[in-house]
Image (cartoon, rainbow, N blue to C red):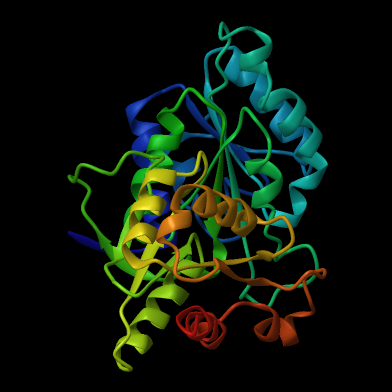
Length: 324
């Protein structure tokens, strides 16, 4: 076991992927000499060269468009979008080219592109630096969307994503970059598109992903002091959703609360609520509840703590669920 921050675990995973396959290339703004804004790619250009860790122009559409060409020529490009709010200039390339090329060619052309996006709030950043765009991409057929919540998953999931022949949106919860955890580099990882039960419980299921998993684990620990047993499910993959794991947990507890940073309206919580209702209707003891960001643009950093779901808001939803 090695103790790493999530940032260092991602760096180690990228390094291992570069070592394993000479066709793996990294590309993005300032990822080479600087090592990226969050230093996720620090030291990789020095060790693998400028031809494999490429400092790109400041042009997200060009970065993703170039990655499409690289993938068609047999490479496995991993591109970094510097901040979540900067992805939208590349949105056209992602949804019209990256997501559709395999279908358009009837499976003859795979597109193994990984698009890394630091996402979410909690770092006190300015406008366009704290978005949660996951629903846009999860709604797009042809894309797979995954997000890690801890260093071990970060290490393994980035490697699994790079090895996949499908295009993957890889969401990294930026406010968890410095969280530490144990990483077993010799372990057998979970399948990439499988959810996991991060904490067993019997009274209410908390469904979360990315930055909110830790928040839900903290809520479960606090609830235990009051005699309540909360189960926490880390979704890990947002498209495809591992419905089977979700259903098993909710059928056991009879109650579900979905927690995410993104706005509530038409977010992942809405899709999860619908699936739970379809599959668990006769097991539910209360309506599925959602704890999410408010339906407004991300606020100035000084008031982001009022916007982001926290332990108190999660426990309030648990109280309302148990009151039914």
